Length: 152
Image (cartoon, rainbow, N blue to C red):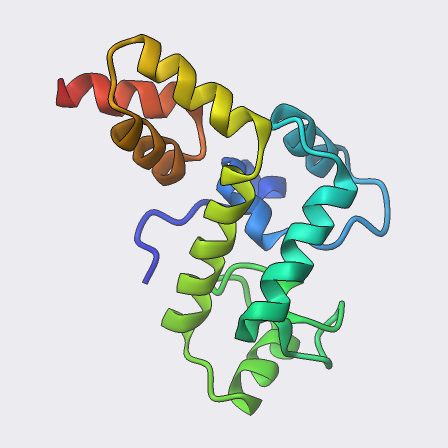
């Protein structure tokens, strides 16, 4: 399972928590702030999630709140709709969270912040591979820098 999974954005989680966000059907200042911080338009965010759902089993779950597991919250938050959808397709918690981790990484990788963050860390003498890994594991450029500095 995703050991260091973040909280939801609305619960103070880092940018990886965007994998657990609802679709932008109504105004959410936290959602908006998180997307602005990675310089990603709402439409692009929605497309990334929908495309990911079309390639994975997270696209299933028509009886969930928003018609797909792609928009569902973290497994630790009780939800009978998500849980019944997962049961119907025989998806376990580990698979669900692994797919959400992959989704979080895809969202971050496709953000302008990711490329800029990797470049900034490389300028500090950190390898591209280490920079990418640290950003994806933390969802936070400052924390990523702290991690890789300890490794040097």
